[in-house]
Amino acid sequence: MSMELVRLATTGSVDDGKSTLIGRMLYDTKQIFEDQMEAVEEASERRGTDYVDLALLTDGLRAEREQGITIDVAYRYFATPKRKFVLADTPGHIQYTRNMVTGASTADIALVLVDARLGVLEQTRRHSFIASLLRVPHLVLCVNKMDLVDYSEERYNEIVAEFKDFATRLDIHDLRFVPISALVGDNVVDESDRMPWYTGPSVLHLLEDIYIASDRNMIDVRFPVQYVVRPHRMDHQDYRGYAGTVAGGVLKPGDDVVVLPSGFASTIKAIDTYDGPVAEAVPPMSVTIRLEDDLDISRGDMICRPHNRPEYGQDIDAMICWLSDTASLRPGGKYAIKHTTRWARALVTDLQYRMNITTLHREEGIDSLELNEIGRVRLRTTQPLFYDPYRQNRETGSFILVDEDTNATVGAGMITGPAQ
Image (cartoon, rainbow, N blue to C red; front, side, top):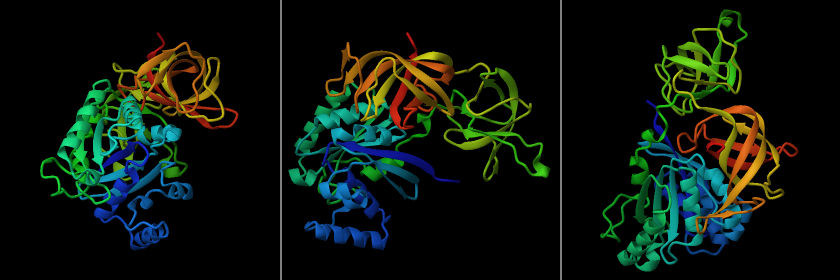
């Protein structure tokens, strides 16, 4: 049986130690090759540090190493005997908020770092709000650099109380706290004996044990068709399957299904994978579904249950994070929209408000969204979309906007529901 895959994102303010935490985790779990370690040791020596700077394991861009900050999203992969992890090291600087949104959008767990000396900063609140907006199910606040405050329990409790007070205004499903020193390794992989007052698990033990299976929508069957499989070999001429990634629910052979937008009904004949047929398919498995009936189905169609269908419409309300540094989002703007496997064109019919993600207040009466800003908009699409509210299903509730002239992704959106 394959190990469970968990997606992580590290967030927090500049220089709170995100890259160092990841480097420490990779090092202490023995995921580093000898030549990688030698390169980091040499780079640390060139920078004049009297310690091996494990942050260099993830800060891959030359500009990042020179400035000592993370700019792009760095992805790292590691595994323990219990789980496999995909880890996104996201930037802390306000200038790169869009990169943080990209890295956290698919995360199961967000690690928010706080410098124990500085406490909860504006960027800490900003990133926690974005993680909440993106519906990251689990948030772990890592109070870092405890070695620089003499492992003070009092200081740790102050930060926990401050963040808990802020978190009451956020929609956070599961919140945990861990005091750590990423540089020294306290409570990262192994539990520290320098903080006997803390009796909880280390960061890695938390990541291994947090239950994520129930975070995905296992009730509403959603299967966006990505590709129609028609083998050209003579001995497979009668094969017709529909490939894609399960976005919600549980699919089994024998289940009655309906295809949107046609409304044609059928029954699942078999579910195929690269390793052969399976008895059921759940999110986020990539599978090929075969039906009992030969229906006209194409890319962008949605397979679901007859009496449990997604919302269906052309007018939607959504929260948008604007990603473009060359153009603003304004009412009247026209873009290509990609939702699940379906492409259409979209018109911005209304810009309702901008979210001040420092104060969490709504700023109404605005006429544009600029780079890194988040606001609520109303869109009208040229083709109906089959969607669920983002809070119900992150896969069928999200979309991107693309500038048709440059083919650049300019916006990331979360559907709140039909236009009101």
